[in-house]
Length: 219
Image (cartoon, rainbow, N blue to C red; front, side):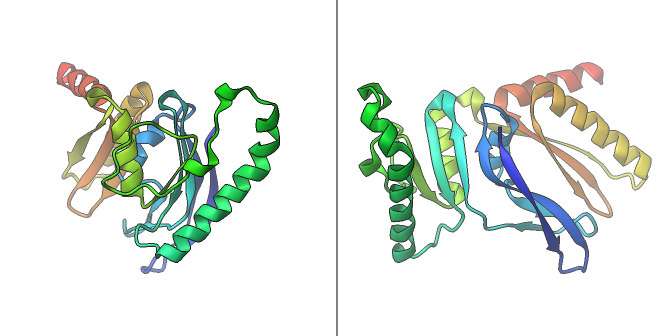
């Protein structure tokens, strides 16, 4: 199960609100979060008053067992080399403490190779997935994810929008979008502007294609 914590944030507009910040993402249990990551919306908070978005620089673990992908994600892609080395050393020590004793009694098929932990750059081609990869910036994680997904599994998105300012109509649009997202295990993100209300659905291209066909059948 994925794990998040609540943080209280203050928007420049003065609004104070709570937002969920993830420190562990398990897409086997919460598959829609894979597409939240690919859309660049994980740990991005939206002010309920003015709609302003802000990313929270919080490290997290990303786990996708079906694709043998496990990554520690540091939020800053511009982290200096000294900071990167310190993070890598700390992770190596943690791995040694946690799995070292177990590895002594495990069969060779367990195969955790601590020495293989190293930063993954934007141009790194993923030939095989080690037990843990360390990436700096969500864009690098997106590259790793796309490397293991088929074309049909990659990010797809669709927008449902209305120019009506009627709150009931906007709420109805959001309800329809949430129902479709729940059925197809997609993620929903709303943009509430004064002249337009847009609800985005994020999921695999296969899922988004199915939603488009469903909407076409209803119209």
